[in-house]
Image (cartoon, rainbow, N blue to C red; front, side):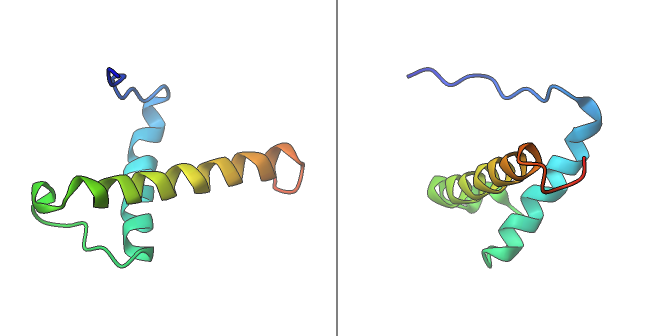
Length: 69
């Protein structure tokens, strides 16, 4: 299946997403500094999957009215 190009819809969010990626990697105990090409694809997928899980949880919480915008 072809991969969709990764696009950030809100440019101001680019740095926040980059910081979020490092936070998630840190929580998982993964050293996400240095040569990222040395990390296996599975590790990158693990970080990305956890990012998506946390973003979905935050959106669901916000839509339920439990978190201020």
